[in-house]
Image (cartoon, rainbow, N blue to C red):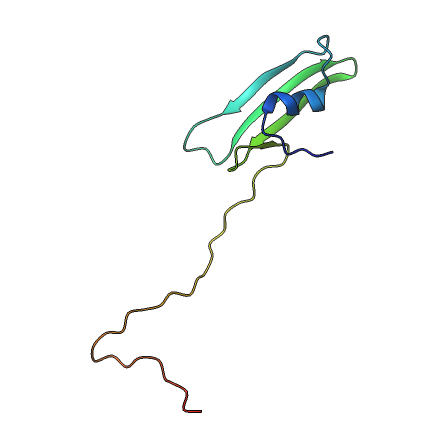
Amino acid sequence: MNTRETSLRRLVERWFGPDPAMRARVTMFSHAQASRWRYVCVASGRPSGELSIFFFRHEDGSWSVFPPETRRATMNVARMPVLPGVPGPIASTA
């Protein structure tokens, strides 16, 4: 099942079904700037018990049942300016 959708409503209908007897409702959400992820918890009563699913908002605006990947620190090569009196990189004499 493809879980990448742009519309939260369409994703909820896909997971819970369009049956109005099984009404889904939002039970929790986070929208604060300080929170690590934006998420919505949707629940629906079933004959076997309540079903709750967390949906996570990704940077591209899509919703998924999987949280976004954590950003990790990366290393990068940067060119440093040549300063007067400081020897530059050693040139190859080949």
